[in-house]
Amino acid sequence: MRRSGASTAIARILLLLAICASPPTLHAQTASEELKLEEEFTDPLTTLPQLTVRDAYTPAMYGTDLEANDLIVRPIIPRIPPQTLLPFFQLIRPTFRLATLPSPTGGTITGFGDLPVFDIAVLPWPDRKKTGVLLGVGPALVFPTANERSLGQGAWQAGPAFGAAYTGIPGLLVGVIVQNPISFAYTSPDRPPQNTLQVQPILAVHLYDGWYLRSAEATWTIGWHHNTPTMIPLSLGLGRTFVRAGLPPMSFFVTGEWMVYRQFAPVAPQTTINFGMTVAFPQFRDWLVRSATR
Image 1 (cartoon, rainbow, N blue to C red):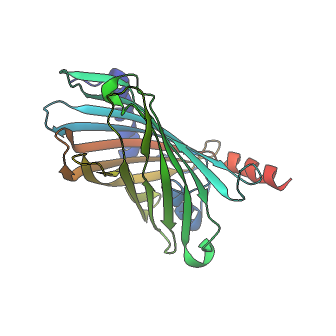
Image 2: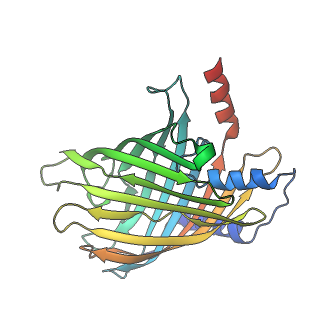
């Protein structure tokens, strides 16, 4: 399989920026501000509005000699009381996906996947300033938006979502997002029911001068129905934050991902390389806070 020209270009540009580029910081940044920014670029419960674009290239797969590629666009959209239903911070995270995958009929197929969305309310307890712990709960939804049958599950799904993050040690963030969407309606009568536990472990460790160790791309999936796939990948790589005058804060990262366990998944990724960038919009959060206090 040959990857599309657009996906190849994105991957190469992000790789060069993440590994080779070292533009000078144009305004001073304290160590605490640097650590805070690294955390917020990885924190699953951050209230920092941001947009992540990631190209996941899979050169080796189990069950086929073909390759795969996912272009993923994932914004984090915060809402602040009183613009929320409950008196809590609310985080909305949709995931848009353009995938190139092996086709059941041979060769590969490219198209849009399903649209998963979680809407998590950040709880005010325990006190994060005292414990370093932040918790959130809410619904997880999956909309069957795939334009090709093999690129989606063909099921409307809803279930619980849970998030947690610990930042009690300077330079360290440990977090997790847990979702369990369950199907309740289908796009066709021959679509199988869905009930899958999804666990996204998250780790960020500050290294030096904006560089940090990162693990946030792998998602474990455990199917509750008989003979449904279970896959446990692990990811690890490097990221770097950039803060320059006149531009929004940015982070570039490159991570490797390996499938360490799979069951009932005859075709599955074996190794994946993630090239990504995140752009933050702190002025939007400031505007939300000002609007909420008026």
